[in-house]
Length: 173
Image (cartoon, rainbow, N blue to C red; front, side, top):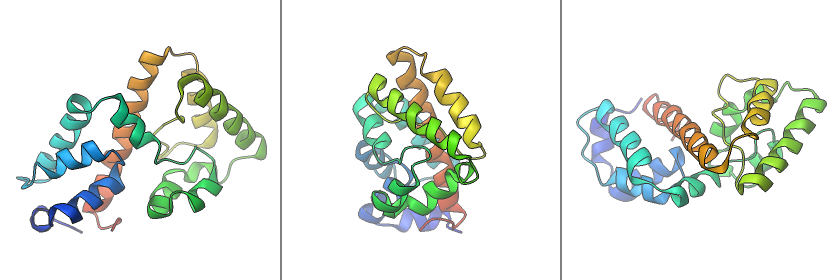
């Protein structure tokens, strides 16, 4: 467990490193680190959300998205995302029991999504089966780009909040 006092005692570099594990947008993490000291956990979460929704732009969101493995791409968890692979692996645990057919459909859907929108499919995978994620992906392929970036940005924020909570609960170092 980590408490707000411990967070407030971190130097800016350590705080930035911790925030970047929660969300890989340098702008978001830097602005949030600049809010230190935090009054309490709610203050930190309020600032995290406010910065993400009101002070970050599309390029910040895309930067955060680029740090995620594709849903179902277990190889990329092991290779590209070593510093957050435990988090992402657990977040995508619903993929582990998926059939090869579903995994193949996810891979094909991810490819279509990336071609259409220019970034990987982002969904808060926690608690979702591979089939649920596939259904969400297929539904979101019908969105126009302006609507979809906002949905992806909101999904990223859900992931960030889960990771911030894991940090508070001592499940992330």
